[in-house]
Image: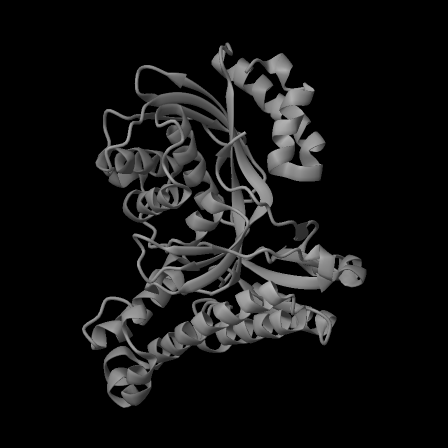
Length: 419
């Protein structure tokens, strides 16, 4: 489409499909993105727009990497790209606030110097497209994102899904499923970016809406949409960015997966989902000699989180928000006590997640619910706050964590898509 078509009623209707009652505000954002594209790439022939949302983890903290169950939702913060195909196989991505990136898709090898960078994600997505026999090629893209980096809303997954969605629609007529785009994205992050993440983030970003996901078979995850509107029950979903230092935490994140795996390996299995919980409980004395105590605690957390995901999903489906809240709090306490991802032992004097949870409990006792969100350690907490208590909750959190630390989100029904 042309830049002058962005302010049309026809394009507004397309935005409304994705953004609902926020569509008109998005129109200006898309126009500014098109103007950036025109400036940075000199001309617009046939511009196309793509979007991929961030996600919030509602239940199932650190379960996906051991083939567990999660309840997640796409949110109304997204990464958006203005795109034009190019014929030389080169991908140029100019993300607002970052240096421009260029990837020649003629070279799809893993490059050690790119690990941990967006270059690796782009190259990894293309490599997996190639391995699976899908078409891929070059394009120019200007990207803007309000999925804050380090916010616990999976900005990296949104970025990967965005790249995969662009390639899907530019070169494959949109025929690749949302689940497979998620799997491709996870491959890029695991192999090229070199981060041992599970599949939850990418699936929630790619599929959209509230989703219960069972990863027992990661090649064919079972996805169940859950129809629920938080606002109708008089609550807001709040995410609080605690502003912790994420430096050198990769080892903390990786240790959770490795320790859970070590319990599975005691039984000759790869992941905990392949091991019966009763067998773990019956062999604690022998297991701890090989794995240490924390690994067993994390394994027990895993089994109980899977059960909580089922209870959370059932509570939402039945409209029982009181049961939902109590289960959220139970999940949070298990993450704190047994999964132990609310602060890092390498820097025990800095505990922003734990402090935020402590304050949230005082503010929401017998009213709302709260838990660590996502990876933990130095990231975010999630809270379900009564509408009438929201202003106070936001004000208190911002008072000691910094301005705009707390923000209110909505669940978005669409995942990665062409707008």
